[in-house]
Amino acid sequence: MSAERVCHACGEPIPDPDDAVYLGHEMSEAGPGWEIWAHRAHVDQVGPDPVAVTALARVLIVKAMRS
Image (cartoon, rainbow, N blue to C red; front, top):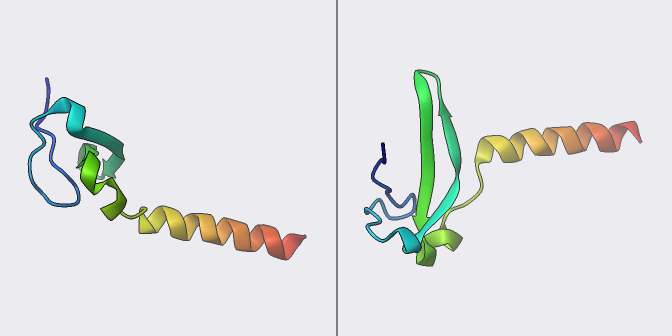
């Protein structure tokens, strides 16, 4: 089963598989989640996941305070 790829930056479908860039997988509480895709030209418009950045920042702060 192949789901339609939609650009995370512009919301438009990505019909050409060579133009699609896989960015990751977003989890869902009610199911398996979904894959995140973007057009090659839009990859730089998609920022990092704010939840992951916050978690990493907390880990680095605790690590820095212990040393």
